Amino acid sequence: MTPITNINQLDLNGTYTYADYLLWRFEERLELIKGRIFKMSPAPNVRHQRISTQLQGRLFNYLKGQSCDLFSAPFDVRLSSSKKLSNSNPEIYTVVQPDLCVVCDASKLDERGCLGAPDLIVEILSPGNSRKEMDLKFQLYEECGVREYWLVEPVENAVFVYVLNDMGVYVGLKPAVSTLRSYIFPDMEIDLEKVFA
Image (cartoon, rainbow, N blue to C red; front, side, top):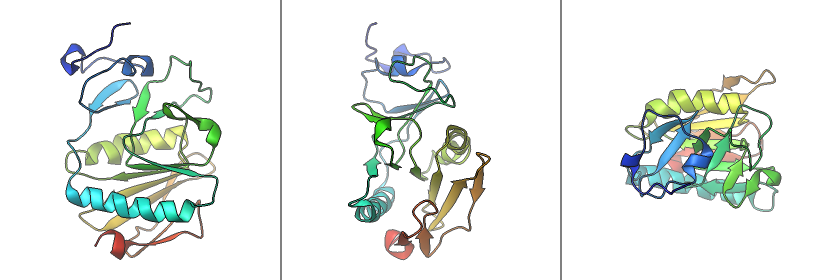
């Protein structure tokens, strides 16, 4: 198949797979959610980057010496609600690039990124992407089995933590405004005053 070098060669209302995504060779960053193209916001602003750096540093320090890996965008996470994911599966219709993600199952990692649900995903809201993160990605991460999802709200200096229960449904915990605690990493605590400083 021929590589696509200009986004204008795509039908933005069309349906695409991961195999199509691999042929795209243009500068614009996109995500595929259930086959639909979503343009990513322009480069994140300074506040967004500072928050991401602070969270990344704290997660990195916590995970040192553990069997989990931390990744930051751009990093492809290929998701499917199907339990049968493989590198050759042409039925992958979702590729996202979370701000941060933690993967504890090394078998999900390959040279292209993560194939399957990370254990923890962190998305930081930015102007223009809040609807996608709050609605589409919430449903997507829940459906695909992401065990814990942090939605960071920079305007309110808060983190909303969602944990997957035994029925596969997210349960929202009390919003974190001073100390952020992880459910799946119970001994991890993050001082949010420093994160949002």
